[in-house]
Length: 312
Image (tube, rainbow, N blue to C red; front, top):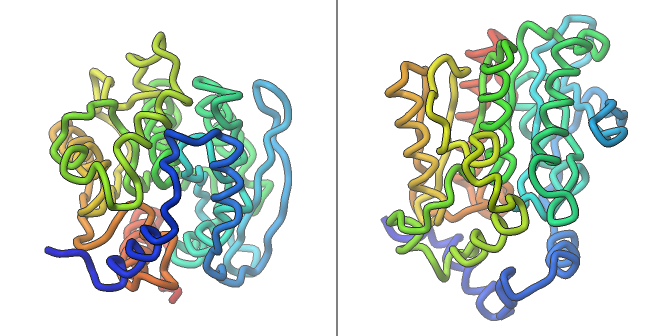
């Protein structure tokens, strides 16, 4: 289908700005531009707390979102923000983390993992794994139920969530669910969505090449924790919801990853949102389809974590 009218208008506005591609920018300039962009207002929470978890290179900052008051242990979701492993942080994804907590009814723990290129793979992955492992051991201290622990992430965060899910399987940590929103899964630039959506739809294919070059040194490109599509075995992974966007260079790899999981017997749902672009779930103030994606994610997570009710 064609671009949704509100998405086409957004792209027209971006074209008038005529911003240079990220591949022609520096990490510092790209971060400044991202931080300056407006973000939607986040959902109200019963409690939001900042803390730290011991990591492989020092303390890792986390932000803990509890959507409802009370003493009942809630499911726990380790959330890894997007931004090409180079951009954003806990603050930049605060509104999306709040929305995820509100929709899922779970305690969401947003992770301030180290960013590339200053800290390339395995640093971001190791930080996300350290927090997930800590939540499995100490989640009850947050009022959570470690027996109902999952991971979630958008874009580069989806890559980190998929890598952590693989590592959890390999190291015997049972996860309940994984939410992968337009995840970065592969380094194959020849897929149709990489070619057809290479220019003009916000995220450029050349930007993805640049992001991967910041994140993964050549010697790690066969490591499935860095590039999940390199995994030789995708069985026994946590059930997954994978959401993709029609006009996104990452569309095909996310769907191909879902097909690999399904072929290995994993319970997976793959949903393509038509007429939208990469990043749409973070723009629910402009793109109504984002609300549908939030609701789908919330219902899937509530079913997986066995929570009742639904938050708007």
